[in-house]
Image (cartoon, rainbow, N blue to C red; front, side, top):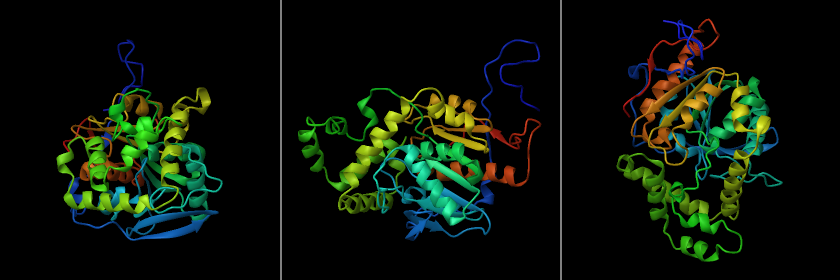
Length: 352
């Protein structure tokens, strides 16, 4: 049945805008989830004047998916999801400049806009376009800015808990509340000294406790991998600058009004878009999910009960079904009369 247009009803009464639900591919069309899989091999690539470290997931010829991690994340955040989607697309998970194993931009710039421009130059230079673009958290903000500014590069867009403006002053949104104090110039020395005493395994566990809806589902070997990454990242002289710069750059973007805001960027996105949110997300409030979808020209929503901020890690199979469903609908040319994705199967919630 066709969905009513936003704000209208057959009886003439005003209705709230419709939040369109995700299209799901059958689980049996995806490969088994291999929780023992190690991160995909990585290498450094220079394209379009930008050098990035990437991890590639061999997959279907002709279709390419590009994965963009969040603040303090890396390409390894996409190991499981990229594997599940490999039969449909060759995967390229990037380390944003200054994160993972990628060197910073020169001159050093940490804003989502600078990262979006750098990634667009990289994709243009590599000849990768249009691609299926996926971003989580800060990477979601980067991905939506890229999609708004460079529609020729983006075939579909997936935003997993994107870092849309959320100005709640709540220290529980940090893996360690002392991080807030450490960011204060001049006054944060004691907090920085205390944070330096936290071991890498404890830091990994803090991040999981913050980002997962249910931290108990995190496999032990993933915690070991995260610990190893924290140790390796601690050896990079730019690591602290990257985290601080990206944090301030992201928050500063939340204050941009009008046409410069992320909400305006969402309205400029033309690609079919899937928005995924966990209802236990502590970092970006789940209440922003519906507004995010309604800000898009062609958006659908998958809400995951019991899941936190990194749904692609915590509930990769549920996310993969929704991503694959969108890709399949677009590939098959399924369109409704308003030009948007046709609803083959719609869900409001999926058990993770």
